[in-house]
Length: 362
Image (cartoon, rainbow, N blue to C red):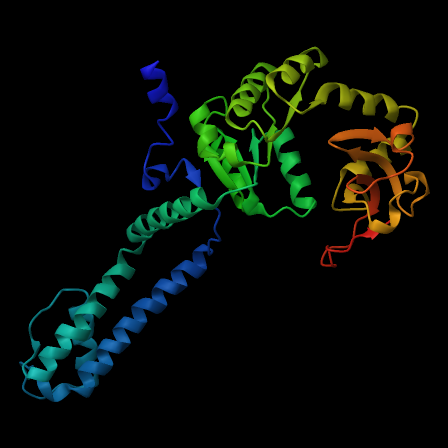
């Protein structure tokens, strides 16, 4: 048991800097041309600042030729000094020139070297930034969505969340496929490299403080184990799991899943419907696509609607959620809506860039 506990807490006990490469925080990266341009500009700035300082105080420098320090000599001294070559043919001799070398030129030399070895330092700086972001994220993450498995199902779930207006920073993806994690990170999602069946990986993803957990693994047995682990860590989270076979639905339910989607049967029904009613399939796909056409949404009952029938409201109401239970719109239990009910209705998606706070109702 001690060994199992040590294995379980292996990741969560690590310091933040040791999690770089396991947890990845999203960030914007400049293109290669832009990165090279920035480095060249930094190098030119250090060089020009050194040239200006040497030339303005050229009386404090000695040249072995004895003809004084010209602008060309100032450029020559700046290049050999910043590159730490230092031939010694031009040297500061006055106190002011030497003080300027100590206080100004030496820091510029360091800046120049940073530009020259920028790739190595960038990697080190990246790790430091990632460690700091991970530390802040672990302390602040609350009410987020954890998506376990970023295959076809997980990717579709994330696209649906983003289409419904969820912030990318509020979604955490757990997977072991680096290509999938790279794709998720490109969307601005937080990613965790690890197996979702391990409790320490789910702890690292903040499952215990998550609002919802989406289980989108490729195998039903893995989905059962992930659901069991997630339910143990997050008793109050809403867990949605997908399975391939309907015979495994009861296993997911017993493991703690609140909602189970049978992917093979759902796809099969749509395929069957498409053979004789293709328009119905198109409408279903429209309703399931949150960023175009029509979409299914939910809202609270307004004060003026209390006591009325959900079938007589201006919106096309499909169902009513009362005390956590879903009723169809024609159910006698919800013949009159009450304060605190939630309506599931059809809304028209506003165009991109429109005010998402007030979606147009149908």
